[in-house]
Image (cartoon, rainbow, N blue to C red):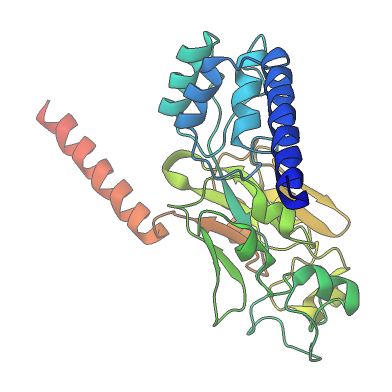
Length: 294
């Protein structure tokens, strides 16, 4: 027998023996997966966004099955109907979570925040934050490189070319939190959606004193505290020259919006106040006519 055939025969037998050994080991140490894990995984979006706090959808599905309860286990992407289906599979009750949405807390548009220097480095907010702190006089606001856009797996946030700021698509946002984690300045926050998707928040994170903050950005919070005094629900605090609205306490009365001299407090998805006044007047007239008829 030639040396070549001998080598081929030896390699073939060796491969066959090793294959049999691996097969036996695999059968012996095989881990049986709970079929419920696969059922839950099929219900999940498969985005592996990490918004649930687990490495991916598979890890989330395993956690749902292995835990004794669903406390603290919630997929921010899944709707309540899907979570109820998961609850039915696991046999555990699901907490009724509050829907949230990503909010960009910066009004430093190109108009409000003039550019003082150029930046020729990598197109990354994380790199820009380490290199020169951005191109404006504000060392707290948006850097405009779009790290949040790259991090979003749901195409729910985009850079506005006119303002230079990211904008959240409230129809697509799943509140996974990826954009908030990607922002080195921490200007993106997850807040409650509330009724009719209405939100009131301070669109600024600048902690400089009033004159310095206003010089850097025309729409900066100057820490005057007028909003704090105006709030009847004690939902606003002033710390480090910056006002913050606690969305758990806020009742969306918008009194703070009227008091802010910088127009830094945003009220989203509210009807114009003129429309509200007209509606109140119509309602008052209707009630008056009804009482007269009676």
